[in-house]
Length: 272
Image 1 (cartoon, one colour):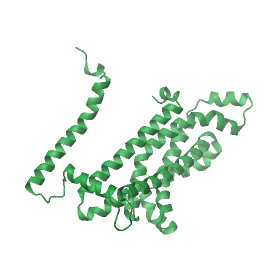
Image 2: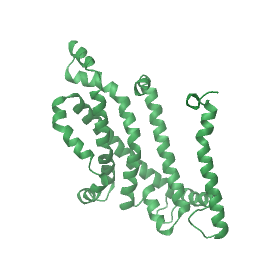
Image 3: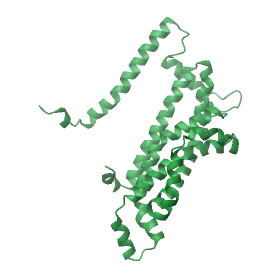
Image 4: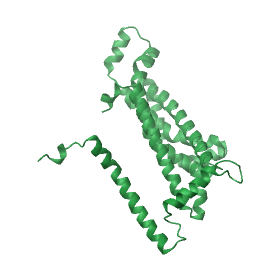
């Protein structure tokens, strides 16, 4: 009999096992919801799937009486613009800082300690400072996301740069490459796959900072809507919004992974 540690499931079995926990959770929720609603039809803690579907259909298909916009899609658009803007700025900043401090010892000695200290500051602790200094507009929300994940990306890129074999740098210098050429043609191509992976790992934190900023100061967005309707215990809206955020996060992670495999197929073995 084959030992369990040596058993590798087939593709179909792997898919079944992956979907099984979600199916079980759904069945448990449906049973609990039905039981609570049978006891109290006005119960708002565990709404039925039909109630959640009706609530989201109303927000997604019926224009808001206040703004005339489709609330669900407007919230999604606003949140995605903030998230993608903050992540893009953080990725660019993290790439440049991480590459330079990882490749140039003089910059490492100068900036690495500061980067380490900044990475230890809880980003949410500086949110009031951002609101005071920048205001309550979009800039403060995007800045919070950038501050929250840029140090992580920078330190990751820094370590990855330092792990590149010194022999490559010596060979490039032997062939007459300048510092800029080494950075751009030797180090940068090898760092790009790690940058995409770092962005994937930081997306969860990015969503956290986005929702926190929207909950405190915003007039639209997924986080804003969740915290707005919680005062009415509108779980028929909160739960679908949470599931929608989770789905968006999964899609971003999947697409970034697919992009990495397409652009840098050689890096899979290295990452493994």
